[in-house]
Image 1 (spheres, rainbow, N blue to C red):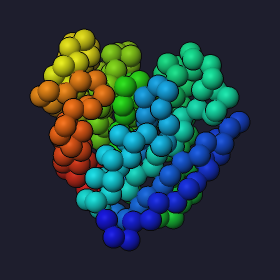
Image 2: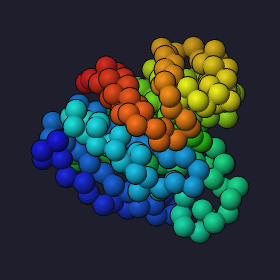
Image 3: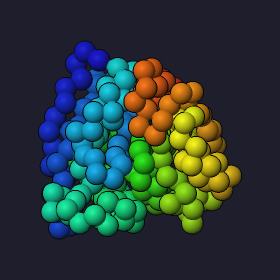
Length: 213
């Protein structure tokens, strides 16, 4: 979107500083915070493309590293859902420090393990109105799913059969407004032609519906 400028930011939490990229179009109607999957970062090319599609529809985005470089060297940290959820909450609490993001309604976009963290964080953050999961592992947050109130969209590839089953199980636990979409011909990473574009369209439509002021 013309006028949407990406700004490099440092998110200072209790004991760490996490780099991020904040983009807020003029007169934005909401803002989506990204929680990437294990082994990925704020520079995830797939999340960057989805973020651009969200920005093009007049919504802001925040992509940031959930772990420091040192923490990411410890493999188990990538699957510490509570740690990642707390980092997501910390970034959400940091956003009001930015005048351009202070009054915006919020959504979470989570991929893989990041989806579980987004669901866990949303239980403790009533400002979050919508969640989108791409190839996510919401089953890693089963204990909190009945308490999620944000409208939740689960997107899974049709070739990702194991994750489809895990998402269906999680879907049945959710008691909020919810939807599950299976993208034809897509594997776990949505690498097939046209499949990531399908994710973009589904995610943008969901956030546009639920993040209106």
